[in-house]
Length: 190
Image 1 (cartoon, rainbow, N blue to C red):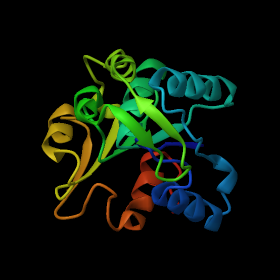
Image 2 (cartoon, rainbow, N blue to C red):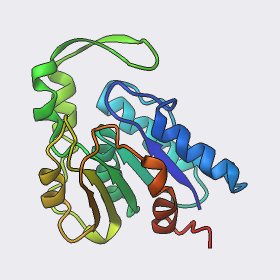
Image 3 (cartoon, rainbow, N blue to C red):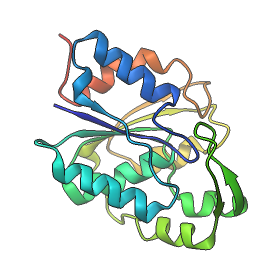
């Protein structure tokens, strides 16, 4: 079993959630079963990198996607018949990011780039019409200040869902849900 973590917009593999998953798997002696690439800012390039990684993996991983990474995970789960854990996922990032067109800087790497209409078009091209809810485990916090959690709850209707009062977009107390993520991935610790 393997977990493939997909970080969000202007984030990186050094994000808190990626590090928490890596640390937890390390503590279980399973650290080699975790992958978290730094994704390019261009959606088409991010998907190409992830498709290449999937082609090289000996077995199907479970995807864990946070925010924009949840949107990417949805696309990949649909196209490769994979399971995916979605943490405060972006439902329509091409709309969400439109007001942010212009200069950007990655919070973790410091990389600067220009967010353009081409980015948004590449995101919209990844939209999935009909989901298979059995593939997904949705984790959302009502207090998410960036995304409206209700959009994700509606989008992933029929999927396993945990809706938590309070919280924020970073997903407070993420560590409390690590075992549930591993159980969904078939990597349970019991």
